[in-house]
Image 1: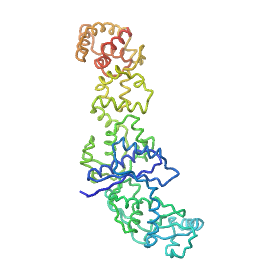
Image 2 (image 1 turned 180 degrees about the vertical axis):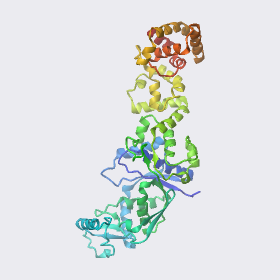
Image 3 (image 1 turned 180 degrees about the horizontal axis):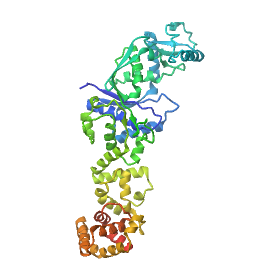
Image 4 (image 1 turned 120 degrees about the horizontal axis):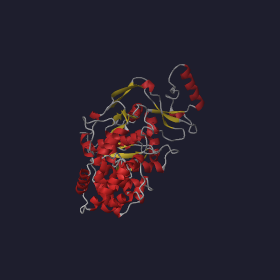
Length: 472
């Protein structure tokens, strides 16, 4: 087992915690937990024009909701700009970087020449061997990495294996801009070194960056962290993940009624597997997680599978906790919902009484609330067309005949309700459905809901009989 493992999640605060970022955070969190290490949070806020406090809050709130706690205080990359500049100048001093004074016009001419000759538009090395002391203090310059001209840079990746990059393809990238601001590529390396990061776990779209960053680590004589570039998430159609596929913020998934444990369970299976296990608890994730189970191919986001996993977690959640979680989500996502508007001591009791029935087929907490909405309906009940058809003349006669049978029940239990309904059906020589379906329609206004025994039990004797009597 690796010792003193330190991973990091390093989002740019330009938007929400999207689903790909959430999975990256989860994998970093799991690897740290699995190895008794730490996961650090670094906010890469060097793009000042796009970084916002709202995005920082959204990222942190999303991580907290998912249960992905980080160690130590968050590190803000922009605050380390002086340190990044210092390293760039140290690299000039040790010969692994150089000052470049080429003008914008000269660089444009280089690009045009390269294009005409069918070459990549790389910097041509005009200033590579120039003595930095020969540059006047008032001359504008950038600092570039002195990439080796020959050979290759190898990235020994925990997921992708050994990936080799010809150095001639890597270019002399800019480390420090002419305005003195460090580039992302330099800042990342300096921060990873200074924060003691031992394992970099991120999307495989950063694989080319890994080669360039390796050269910066080596230019400073620093150890290169272990790297693991995980496959990206695509939509169900195989296309790049977009909003229509599910590339939305964690807060949206919460508002849609997904449970954090269910979402983490789903995300961990996007690119990683433990045999054929589909339902994996958080403790099992920590016990089992490692790079051996990682796929190299992109994963496909599938809402149907997420719904199935979320339904499993809903069914296995304790009723009282599930009720409070559902109400919390509604307060945040739908404060004008019929459930919240009609919530009082009596209806809360009905909700709790019905939770075991509602959750059997619910896919999300919003779905759960929708299934319970009949509790809050007021007389006269709004009727779905199919429910109204069940309450034709025959249906109303059944309801009228059942009312005195139900009034006789002193102990309002599902068993006693069922006994009364079955007894009436038998005496009237009716199939059970011919009795149960009109009863259910009469008290809910719905054609689809929990069964008649359940809805009558959930509403309680007084409310159920009141609705039945109003129907006839």
